[in-house]
Amino acid sequence: MRTCSETGGLMRSALLAAAAAALCVSTLVQAAPATQQSAAKQIERGRYLVRIAGCNDCHTPGYAASGGKVAEKDWLVGDRLGFSGPWGTTYAGNLRLLVSQMTQQQWLARARSEMRPPMPTPSLHHMRQDDLKAIYRYIASLGPKGEPAPAYLPPGSAPAGPAVVFPSP
Image (cartoon, rainbow, N blue to C red; front, side, top):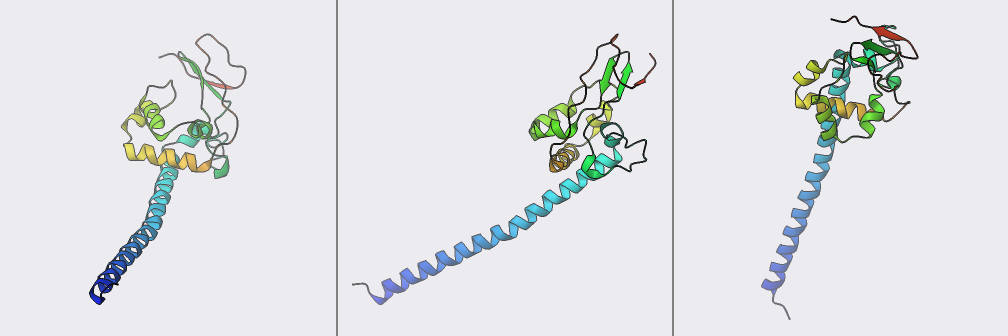
């Protein structure tokens, strides 16, 4: 048989445990909206960066020609317009498909790697890591859509479709 002091001690321990559990649950509930807010802010930052960095100009068909009047649901799906120069012919890739197959770390490594013209590689290399992460999260939030862009053509190969031709330097 337990004494009153033993029962009281058990009761206090149970109450303290319940209070600690309630505090943990409360902290988790408060942290979830903060994490959601942080994710939403990163996605919005990514949307902003995609707009101002000119990503849509090449990676969204008709964006530049329409003065940006392409629905956001159709952004960053790549283009069949080629860019030809001494490097061969490149195509703006479908970033939505690309990101859907990459981790954030793979995206960061790709953004820091060398790319063929007219991709503004120096601009990507000067972006802050958190900006590149925000762009990744924004593109990922759009989800995969569309078809892959045509494959790179080496110098001397004629593009089958339309292409912007850059003169040799």
